[in-house]
Length: 275
Image (cartoon, rainbow, N blue to C red; front, side, top):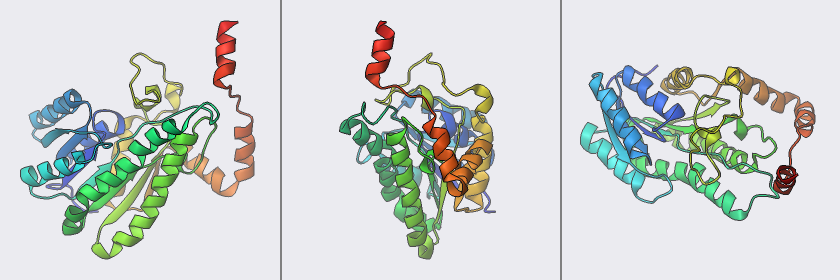
């Protein structure tokens, strides 16, 4: 396992959930952090907290859907810390709904963040990672293995970055750059209360019961260890392992289970609300 002290880590989507927990875990292990997210107030507070506890962190307000923002974050890392060793492409959200209710713009919006945002992060830091022979980390999802009803847009984006990880892994091997795919199941975060436009609905109820969610801090510890060991992929959460295993070895059974899910179109839901 590579030591983390004095490692420089860039994390996108660091304002909440897995990204925020990763920032605290890396800081606790001695890494220097560059925190990137749209919500500047949150990453500013997080960076101040890390520095107050003796760590090193800077916040860079940025959006992975905007050209140039990731290059700016990489430049800050070079200026403040001199190198980049680990890049975590974590920023993302989920578009939900039946395919017949969604439109092309919904799928474009989903891919702009979850797929092209990962690519922007990669291109902005590629030369740094080649120099340090570092690690590029893609936060995918169990949905990149198993597509459930009403998650087509999200699952498509996560299938895409899983394919990207496989291709990059082979391409980067000669440069000494490790590519690790992280595939979380249900981890405690805001992602399930974010609407299809990427806006957090404060006070919205998480549809996944709390007992099924892994704390983000626990997930972060598993992820940091997997990256330090330069693993190919780490499926996070026990139910995530079960879902992926069923998809690989019992796909017909899993399809039967999903086929029994009761889903309603938007019109059916509206009619029910009106009655």
